[in-house]
Length: 165
Image 1: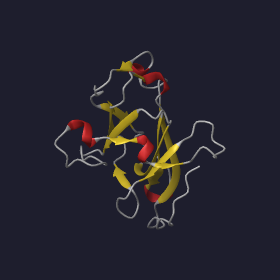
Image 2: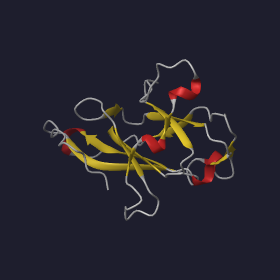
Image 3: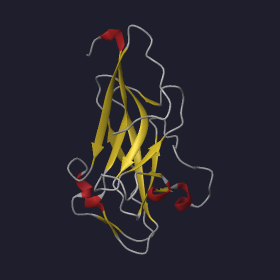
Image 4: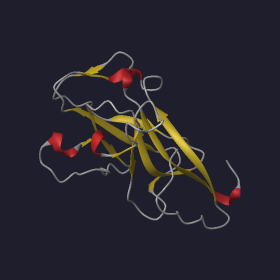
């Protein structure tokens, strides 16, 4: 369960916030079913489509800890949410092991890692019906089996007028 270190501000009336988790894996990304990512290869843009009923504010990312996957997430404006100042493509990805780790002593059998994103007071904004883009890069010494990849986007949906569309 995601719990922010500091409290987020309450929405301005008459808006209503609802916790939301988008999960992406081989069940909703067809190329991950039987695909592999060879050593030194990148996946290209993987669109992560969000619902069109309300704006979404991303506050954290959770991934299955494979120890091999490096990733880059871009917002709806194609702005990287990780380091983008490096010339080498492989340097623009974050190794999931560098994220805040739930740790081996965790009750979670998947050893989930979590990243709290630093963006604005409410999180990283994505308009209703928008998408975020995920890129994977295999910087390991072995091919990466994509069927075990798992990414969650954790945040809130903000409904205008206090009612859901």
